[in-house]
Amino acid sequence: MYFYGPTNIYNKENTLIGNYGWYNTETELVYLDRRATLKNEEQSMTADTMFYNRKTGYAKALSDVIIEDTVNKATLKGEYAELWKKLGKCMITDSLRAYYYEEIDTLFATADSMYVFFDTISNDVQRINAFYNVRFFRNDIQGKCDSLHYILPDSMVYMRTEPVIWAEDSQISGDLIDIKV
Image (cartoon, rainbow, N blue to C red; front, top):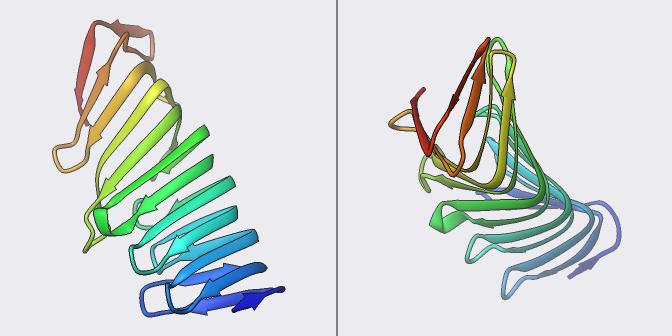
């Protein structure tokens, strides 16, 4: 089926919203253009153009991508993203900006690319890997490194390749920095 105006496609797992595109009901492959959104109760991915395969749970989003997670209070923005729902993995890249909203402040981060790994049943984020030119800022701490790995269940942050952290009047640098959050 082809559509040429505002269209919503529903199933029990998620909703697709688009303004132009097509949906193959046999292969369950969807193309959405002119600002598209794939969402469920907790997360959403919006982009200028999106491809989505309902059978495999794979989505590709192009241009002005915004991924929002209301449970983890996070927003990721970039120009290109891929989602492998059944594998529990999402990648976003190209002009990446990330915002993590906390009770008293917001953590702002940038990197060339970021991978988010999540539990496929609960959608809980398990691990975040950010690569190349990683920078993060909050009112009480700032830092930079070339790769950062955040393991949420252990509350550990691993900073690699020329890591530096600034907090108040102090600076910490080294070959690697591990932080218990």
